[in-house]
Image (cartoon, rainbow, N blue to C red):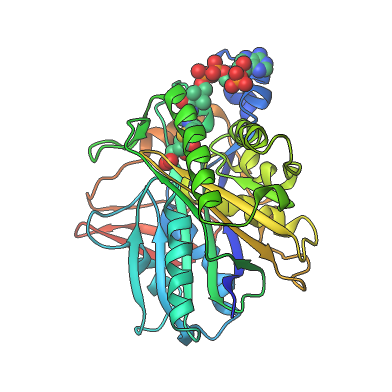
Length: 378
Ligand code: HMG
């Protein structure tokens, strides 16, 4: 019996800011952002959107296609949590009308949480093959205005259904892991933007990639030299290119080409933290028929945990509509002044308020009542 990803869908924010507008406003050469970082645009949330509304929007089409009573776990991975106690997945569970006979929990380890969720879910369905597990990675990347990290902001959610005998990607049981404690990127509880040592973070990422690869090799995992498609966590897409170059060095040049469709998801959405690597997988599966091809995925979460996860696209998977094009093309462009206003308005406050109706997505946050966040189907 194989276990892996049976379905995958992406969602993002209502707005998009073109990187050339940000470059002009900040007095940066546009080529530094488009070529130096490899970023073309970033998703920006409307005031009535957050990680919960994006997560529900990503998961809704998946839930509509299955017998939802088989979902036994909802694992929401995020580092943009909306509450210190209640799991974001409980809001999503209600918005999607999931059965009460479900385990719901939130996972956090920076950008790595989504892949942690997939691995935990895979272990669950290996033990109980009739179970389905819904894993949703959902995040909004926020740095201070005019900081070096600002052009690497973004937002997105990717929902993945993990099952036995999956229809899309069969995952290998062996993976490669690497954890080490480093202060490269973090967000203390009193901040809504991340703190980062950018150049340390890029070297920590590459060290993690190498360490996780060495573990994969030591455990007899799938050879990355034989894998057709290599995908990377892409905080900015130049980072994925650097990662691919490091892997190429480790394998004496015997690596396949980078997948441009997967990169394009990151270049258009920006960093979606935990949803970034799953977004690359969605882009790969939507952009062509990858049936039978090997896949290698490197996840890095600052702080830090890295993992190489491998698998193979099922031989009859065909082209999968993961909602990528609709998510990218459906956004409403904004100017820099509007983006700056939305950035400043973003608040983790529990003060009661009613939010304006802006998003055209299927779910929205209506406001805060008695300190509790209220969500609704549009
Ligand atoms: P910076 O210091 O402004 O940029 O910030 P730079 O000076 O290093 O330049 C970037 C690149 O642009 C360089 O290329 C320049 O040569 C090039 P490289 O040497 O890297 O190949 N460049 C140009 N290219 C073409 N035309 C030009 C031009 N000018 C310069 N005119 C930095 C860059 C990434 C540090 C910053 O954006 C940052 O701090 N970002 C946030 C941190 C980050 O994304 N780190 C990635 C690794 S950590 C990670 O992935 C985890 C994370 O997702 C969080 C999580 O786990 O939750 C972040």
